[in-house]
Image (cartoon, rainbow, N blue to C red; front, side, top):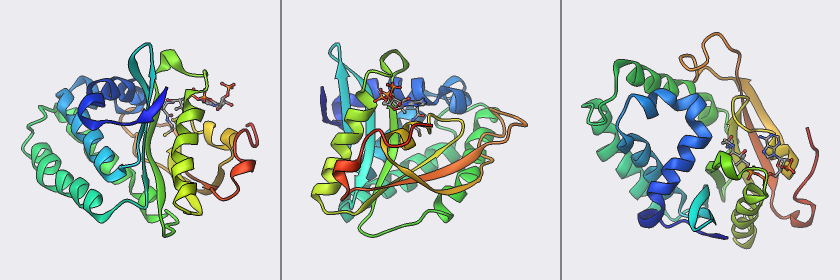
Length: 222
Ligand SMILES: CC(C)(COP(=O)(O)OP(=O)(O)OC[C@H]1O[C@@H](n2cnc3c(N)ncnc32)[C@H](O)[C@@H]1OP(=O)(O)O)[C@@H](O)C(=O)NCCC(=O)NCCS
């Protein structure tokens, strides 16, 4: 079942989905910091997103898509306030009990992800997939596609012509061309210097035209 994401109810299970999808690139933050770090990060994404969905199976949340579709200013403001007044100070004063390595990794992510922002082709009205994951035990059953359908239906309904997503070669980026997205940017990514030392990683930005609804899904398979 796909339904709107409920921050208050879904956070705990969404955190497990987040770990399952991102452990290989974020493990120092999961292993060497308090869980509140990841949960606060999800809270910021969900606040800014405000067009987010959960996939439920066996009575629990097993997939999440946190997305933004021309979000109201009050939601963006709430997310930014959460980042500046809660997340930032807690990280600086180490309320998340990060080890020195986890802190180093967090800083590297912060700097390493900058190209995603600077190279991003922003179009207004704006729609973005901020965080997308399905628990590994539930992948390849069509849940990712259903979550994406639900988000893009909202985007189309709001007459936003394009939706974008940032990904990279360490993530399941092939989902996007398989679904019908087109790669619009490619650049070297240094965010995973500590989790994948010495490896060359490329950052990608994918876009999909939402008006062409009927041509979505299962475009090129790579
Ligand atoms: C991307 C993700 C959410 C897809 O979830 P899912 O529920 O497995 O997706 P679906 O079952 O709807 O997949 C639909 C199709 O997309 C393609 N696809 C999905 N994941 C893929 C992958 N890792 N590699 C290649 N193709 C993939 C396939 O064509 C798939 O059809 P198939 O299973 O019949 O081959 C999931 O792989 C995931 O959580 N990955 C880890 C986190 C991540 O990388 N998130 C996105 C990038 S930031």
